[in-house]
Amino acid sequence: MDPDAVAKAFVDHYYSTFDANRAGLGNLYQEGSMLTFEGQKIQGSQSIVAKLTSLPFQQCKHNITTVDCQPSGAGGVLVFVSGTLQLAGEQHALKFSQMFHLMPTPQGSFYVLNDIFRLNYA
Amino acid sequence: MDPDAVAKAFVEHYYSTFDANRAGLANLYQEGSMLTFEGQKIQGSQNIVAKLTSLPFQQCKHNITTVDCQPSGSGGMLVFVSGTLQLAGEQHALKFSQVIFSMASASFPFSISRTSMFSYLIDLWLIYCCRC
Image (cartoon, rainbow over all chains, first blue to last red; front, side):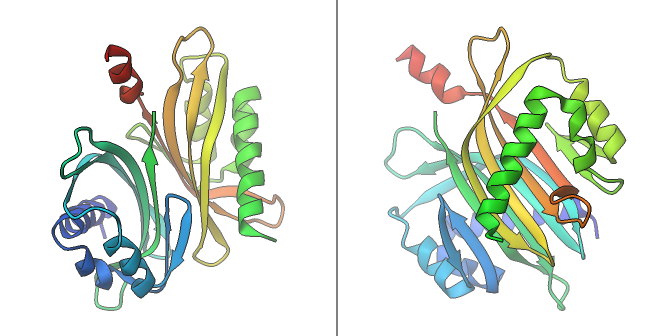
């Protein structure tokens, strides 16, 4: 398993799904998955997708600036992303950082065990 | 122990050690520890400390804005920190984000056995706002 390849494929898939259809992120999380979104803690795939689909904007576009990854042990991959988030109708893009801890599934893919998202303010 | 309290104590220890004496970070890392610093990958306590102590500034001060943490794996803790880094003599502080994956060890309450990813963010928002 090449962590860089896993990270790149995951990041491409995650943000394109987020931007096209947030509900489609459901199968990337499991019961024990955790999301901390701007300080708010949420657990479990259903609650996480409910949070993401209820965010107060319809359309958005993520532009990824940096992706760093490291193997985390037990076959997992840590991914650290920075970039900007452009909301439809907003003049300025928001800067964000997000980290994921991906764990392998028996089927040979990866799911998100840990997810932490923060906007970067001036 | 409360994970948030552990994360908070760890963050305070890590950055106060970094700002006072970077060489003192050595016992937080082990052989299998990994640091990615601005895209550069480094492995092992000795190499990591060599990198941190060779950074091109003498004095610095980290100011922590946010700390998020989650349990991960068996006994592991993920900590996500954002803040600013003030270098002595520089007018503007640098913004940074750092992810630390920490595994508890018996001999020392915190040890970064796996991961520390460090990425500096230049403060583009501040530069933009100054031009308004």
